[in-house]
Image 1 (cartoon, rainbow, N blue to C red):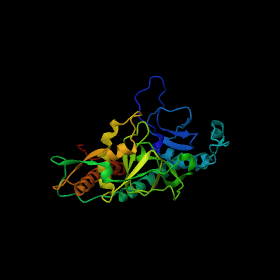
Image 2: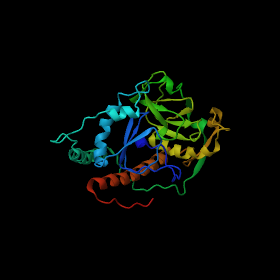
Image 3: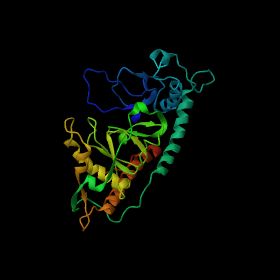
Image 4: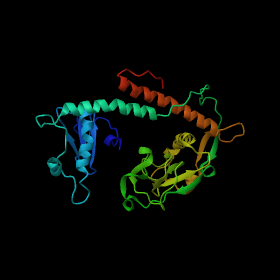
Length: 315
């Protein structure tokens, strides 16, 4: 995931910085990515370079390399460096039988605008509200997690009991990255939990105290508790997770987020004139935020399509 990026780090004096414009191959995971920027990495990552490599020829090569690596596994047929060197891939060839780098680059340059247009068409853009909502002057009230949600613990017994598949169901665990997803696994009916809920991470160094909104069905580890409520949708859900994450500094290895502590957590939410959570305000506010971010992102990829600079934004 994330183009192979594990984290962002400061300059490392003890380690060599690898220059970008290359292809990284994870031998242990059989994963292939084009790396445009400089990076640090470990010994299990192999780096491919070529004088004709660029963003377009690199991305042309990725699926071909992935198919080649797909024959390897974690067992006795692992992707070793020797096997990688001996591996072969099919490439378009010119009249001399050499790799046709010009064709590969032209092909990807022609595909890119069509893919960008398709992606833009799938971005959901909302009509701008006549009233711009802000948090200034909003009344807030405190509410107990156990009073707002029906809480359901994760049912998974660990990744070693599940089959990893690329087109499977989300497997959630103690991480605040990738919206809580550790892997995609083959569905199992007795372990699957319904989506449209907030997932509270109760354990795991660096992730304990976080929460994420999950729209899709999933399988979760016992480090996870899912919260269900009739007012939940992706807008109220993401508003609540933003607020709920404020508690994460309270927990540590010696003070874990137990079921009892989670139920008694207090979060602050906007309230209406009756002192109840103002779900309508939260939903409209997050729709407005999404519209703003979608417009900014659309401008960014449109600028790549038309080779024009995006508008400036004040954030």
